[in-house]
Image (tube, rainbow, N blue to C red; front, side):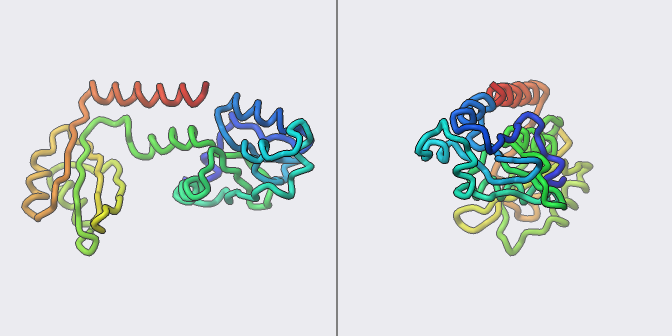
Length: 220
């Protein structure tokens, strides 16, 4: 999935002739702390609420401060991992996207990104979650997948996090509701089972309701 596929239609850019006061109003309305400043598809910079508060007169036009704005953006062809890194590194609520010609194509909001990530991570699919702890030098995706598939399971999604000890926490979303056989096989190969969760219908509905509640809150 590329950055261009993550563009959200509900975050409009602000024009340089608009005022800081208007920008703050829009930020409050759309529940973000950043807005792209755009003139005729030309990206001029990313305006933050802190930038507005630093203005000598917030009722002045934003164009008077354009040179001071951060020129943070991402190419539309970049992978969504790059989007996650940019948003995390810069602590953004909105990330502008430029097309191959350098024109403003739209922006990615954190709320829309979370919704897309939930689909990628198969959050709403039934099954089980299994968390393994693996030494970095022993990690093999092929071996992990082989164990799951040998027990008639499929890995729907996975992610890896490094522990404080330098090991890897490998989180697997597996399509089977019952994974005792998979767990026993991992144990036979000396994998450390940190935890496992069965996602039944009640849990799945509750997770979906919590996620939809969060999305509704972000859209207030």
